[in-house]
Length: 194
Image (tube, rainbow, N blue to C red; front, top):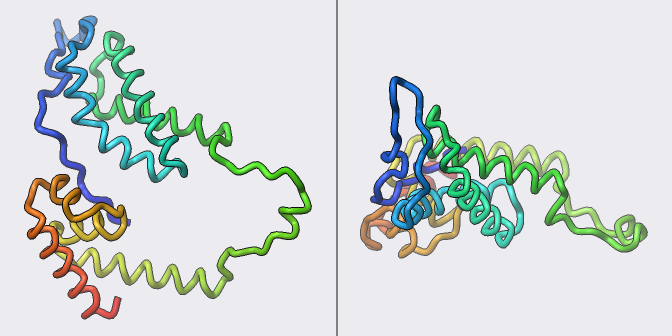
């Protein structure tokens, strides 16, 4: 599936404080409050967006984002600079998410085995799954044919559930522009019978 490009907040890169001597990174000083704020502004939203795809409960996602950023700040002096700051921060977040999921956190625990056996199965059948796959394939083809600006706007509003105002702030454009892009994208997709 197409994932829109996440725009970074216009803040200084905490990695700009890197001190390199002869190709070997030296120990980093502790992050200042300003650099900490820049780190949160730059990666907080993108981490939340990414982890929402891996963790089912939004409250758990918020906790994991906070934990990842705290671990990044706590481990800043140990960051060697062999990778981008974003790669390092997202690596921390993905490890936390993997640990969270492997512990089974957020899964429903039933008190009676009988209740599980008696529950109706709501999973789609093979025919429904095939139809869903075909629809998704056609939708992906349609999205691939749209201009990137329309695809991103449609994705943020229709898939991620952002309001037009939130999407406008995310894309740094006016609300009218977002509404126009979404309307054009929907019209194009309808015309293609998607």
